[in-house]
Length: 254
Length: 254
DNA sequence: ACCCTTATGCCAACACGGTTGACCTTATAG
DNA sequence: CTATAAGGTCAACCGTGTTGGCATAAGGGT
Image (cartoon, rainbow over all chains, first blue to last red):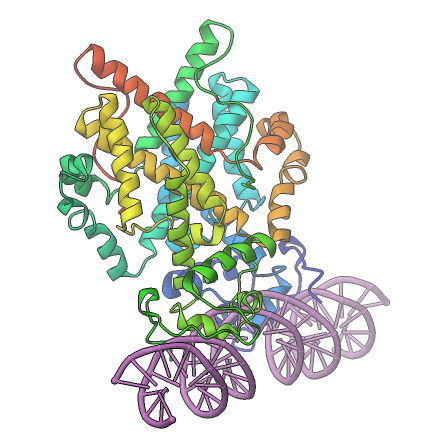
């Protein structure tokens, strides 16, 4: 039956639900975020979302083709929030850096939703807007199209990968997260230097650093790489280091 | 009922199943890997695994506390395989690169387990062994302890973050994954140049590159960064670029 | 101001998922 | 040889996404 989902722009009749709510794509997405925050990653079910909206679960299918489609809409909303809270206008490096950090922290604000959507490509307007901005910054900086695409890919996947990883830790039950964090001060710090010399020599530094995100470090390294590419292609003709060829590893969608 | 799962070492009576198979933890894990490979990535269900073993689904609960527990067992198996299939002995850069790729592809071979375990720190022997190897390579290359720890953190989180991201895509139902991949050739390729000039100019390159993993590119960039740090600290005293300070973003466990 | 079309909410049902309690069988300890 | 309990099986429970059919009310056409 819901082969035909009416797009939001074409909606006319807004019938209130039995309990008075008037549904809309936006209301459903906002409620989904609330349910996600309250009930955890696995807590977003059609029935629970319906209950939270005061509507029958099947009513959702008038707005989304399925829970999968809904998840993409949620991801799109996160992208939009990040973009709204960002402003460019400085040099490409500062802009890219602040955009990456904005995306990262925006996903981290909703860990459950991040875990759910970070590995999906929604193809919706606000995500497309983010992609367009990134590509614009890279090409505007002077990169060739192949290099811009290569670094766009690296930038967006890096950002979303860390968003998902860090969000995954935040989304754990409190006790499990605490146990994971204390692992560095307990298990690792007690390893004998004889069998694990390198861990033993750096145990205190590890315990201090591991509970934080490595995203800023890796992001800056990537920005260094982009700057190096710009310097190389600016002076001489082409090329940079390493076997950065196009031979992909694995099959990915994002 | 399965509050009490008998550990593998304490098992004595091995009753054959109705269809003749003799169950064991190892047989179940191996069969789970086979089912994952054959029935697609979303095809590992208790009922299907039971059928593949020639046993009732509930028999699994004599060996594992639940499907979650079984997934962790599969994950452990993967860590072991990654470490076993790797050999160092060349320069630090080649060793780090092959180790990263080995970990990445090993997790990707079993996406469900990867998604489930990538953001956890288990503190188990094989994982500790991997950490010791990485730290050893970095310190052996000549990095100071703070730099070694910083790059160890970046390396392991980067690898696991991409493993989880890429695995998340692979773990999607087949049709959803296909839809995601075709998004680049459909939605993005059709955006008008007027509104989205940068995407329009690079649409074909994007469609060609995005279905692959960006991990190798980012990994090589990180290795470039390590090499730069070595060169800088080798000649002059200290320092590298960027605001890489210790002020963490977010709270992480891994 | 009316009516008629149809968008849209609701209900009941389906297939499939993990999980469990009760039962039965048989391998092994004593 | 027997008693015990490990471990396989069966049936059932509950929660999941999803859909076909039906009821209703919104709002444009007249």
